[in-house]
Amino acid sequence: MKKLALLLGSLLVVGATAHAKEVVAAPVEVSKEVVVVAEPVVEVIVVEEAFRPTGYIGVEYRAYGETEGHGDKFRGNTGTVNAPADNQDTWNRGANNRARLQTTFGIQMTENAKLEGRIRDYSNLETGSVRKLGKTTGTETRLRYYYKHTDTLTSRLQYRDEENDSQNFEYMLRINTYKNKGGLLESLVFAPKLYHSMAANNGGNYTNTLGMNIEYAGNLPLGFTWDGAVYLNQYFYNQDITTGVNETKDKEFQAEVELYLYRTVGLYATEKYNLDFNFEGGYDPYVFRQYDRYAKDAEKGTWSQTQEKNTYSLYTAMDVSLKYQMTPAVSVKGGVGAEYRNWDNEAQSSANDWRWQPFAFVSMNAKF
Image 1 (tube, rainbow, N blue to C red):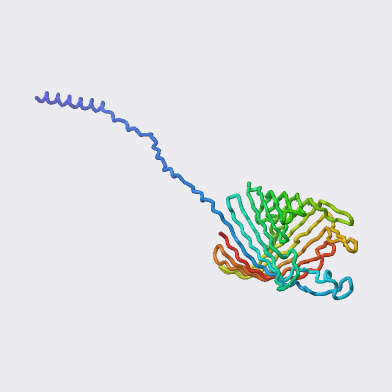
Image 2 (cartoon, rainbow, N blue to C red):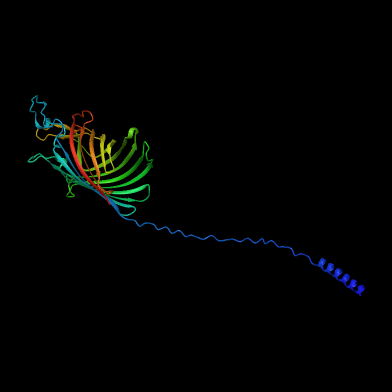
């Protein structure tokens, strides 16, 4: 029995050992699969604000007093104090004690189309006066329509009804050739144009013009700004102009230069009030004509020069104004000042008689 037990035990040990050699641990596999997690897609929808027309309207009343020395008598060619009327009061004759009511408006109708207007009504403040103020009486209306073709090209169509009842039409292609905000030269515009002027009844004298405007603006040290224009015009008249003794012409070249200087100095300011000192001045304009002008005295049969071919008007204007911002869109303004100018004698060779003329104004402006 002992031998049999030993034999069976030996066999169990050998069998267990053999079985242990056959059992091999299975390798652990490492997964190399890359799991990609998709990010959520957020769709951004941009809603463009629909175009809304905008515009403005402004009303200003401006009154002019008597020019310095107005009404003074001086010795004329006759050698007497009470010289003939045409030798008296040669500064700002006929432009005193008058007023101007001005209405301006504009509307941006579409992204590219804009309409602007200006109406000026001149009146005489001298009660009972029979003196005619010529160009300083009556109503002047100006309408301008702009269409922007590109950032560089803009068409402008203008209609103007002058205070002397003449009318004119003008087409201009404005070419913005230079922009440099804040620079010495900030903008430069070249504008070829076609112009036609005629009488109010579409008859009588008329003028056709081919020309070019050159407009400029910029900035100077000490807070000054400047702007102006050069007008180059070739006139074609339907009625001859008298350019000399027994000499007439039906066409003429003319150049005008405008150059203005501006400065505003803030004197006092709050959230709603602004008290400012304003200065402006310059050539308004300097005119270079091709010919002098002459006229013949029908009674005496003598000739005299009525206008020198080169003339200029040089002025300075200063005022103190107070502005009140009623709402973000509405403001009112008022002020007093004076203008110094060679009012009547503008001949280049003899311009004189610079005199002060006081003025006062009040205005209201609204944006919508």
